[in-house]
Length: 94
Image 1 (cartoon, rainbow, N blue to C red):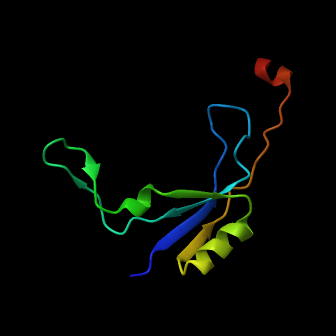
Image 2 (image 1 turned 120 degrees about the vertical axis):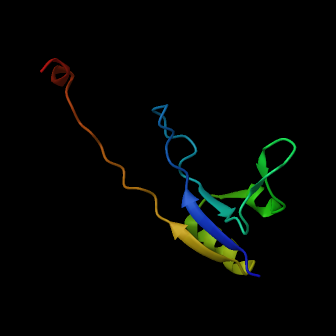
């Protein structure tokens, strides 16, 4: 069975204005099976430990090179386009 991975760029945190750690690319494995609830605790879980793994790369090329070298099927999720909402302070009083 071939593992499938997704490669994406981490988005900016909505609660903060800074853009720290948004330039790196993340490779994470997609779940193979659906998680099931544990009958004792009720927590969702499974036996697929690869979904807990997140690898960070400096560039998209490095992430795709790693996936190709390891024989992983992967797809790249493009980062959403950044929209700037320019407004003046006077707009608050219209």
